[in-house]
Length: 351
Image (cartoon, rainbow, N blue to C red):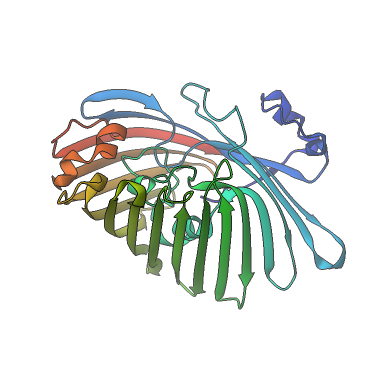
């Protein structure tokens, strides 16, 4: 999600908040502090808990956009994750740290810890919830497209990304990164198209470990289109995981459909459905099945920056997916269980 920004001269508020960034230039004029702080109360499978905003993970961000000579702009971004419910997450290091240059001809180059070109496109064009949540109960892609490869996540260390606005309608992005500790590599590319009320993207992501350690391939395409008041989303993904040295592989094909509908000036209904058909799950020959995820939110805006929401979600499993170990571990599901249901009440503040 893209948040509004608030200029804060000298940014002493950031230091007072406890970020303690070891960066004296952060005190200079031109930096902006913005982000989102949220919390949710949920009941999943009958167990109640408090946690981060399920659909819009909390984060604090510092950004800089400064004009240089010759029509070049300097851009920088630093962010930390935050969790209002316990205050513990994210303050041990930067979640993102980006430095880059932008030219008038539509070329931008950024380096640092950042999203790959593929994840940018999924968030901006393909997913009704912008893959911005903090819970895998409402973010099935997290277990497949971003976090299922040792050394890589949605945000990658040692990354270089080139974005080119070829025309007002067509944008191209490519990125490359090493793994968190210099072992392996990642490459990603995306083509994006915007025209009137519709926008779409096609993407690819390739992760490779050290020799024989494993590989991950993700391809996807889709977009969204506004028809009257409703905005519709559709996307298809093809995902392949393999560990050649262990002699196993895993296949997933996922479809996503979603909608976002304003009910009045303050309230919006959003809903998303994901169907994942998996084979050779966990590298087990013949283990195949399907996972269906449904999530819906009703959000009410309390002015320009604050909002409350109620949500309901369901994760259903058939066939071999009932024994898939990552869903059992991260979704708190008993082995063999066919469904997990939950509801949540949450809210947050953009600043």
